[in-house]
Image (cartoon, rainbow, N blue to C red; front, side, top):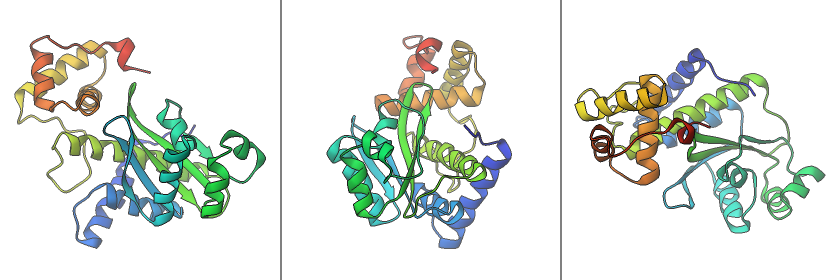
Length: 242
């Protein structure tokens, strides 16, 4: 599986920011999805997230994306459903071949009928906590080449950061989330340091785990940080890391 580099993450972040400036809107998951379509050569993108144990569409760039998301929820199967259930990326170059039809006997024929030919579902997760899925689709069959897949993974990482910052009400800068710790909140900073020690990871990764737990439990970030600092909560490496 391809993996994005820091340089590609920076470049993709710049693309999203440029798109937001072009449209004169704040950076958001909407501008991220629009940028993905423009830069990755896909027909559309849809971002779903879990707010109550059920996938919720946060952004779809067209009606086909909305239809694909609705179909998977309705029939209970599909690439994004596989990802939601704990799988890795589901990269389907052709929904109309026998292997795809056999794997998703209800979803695949309906997706093809709706106009989709290929679908690539990428998980948005921090450790064991799954926050959402970024799905990219095309109206023609074909694999993602290595460079496009690398950039797709960078888009997924930035989508994860935007969702977590949105949940924690941190993204007030109008740009893509950076790996910056909230130094204005000493308790959150202290909790991040404690989580870093508990999981034996860097501060940026520890902050991501803290935000992901806040998201998963629908607990305000400050409240969770207070519990960590007071040693009422602890992050266990075996449970947090895949």
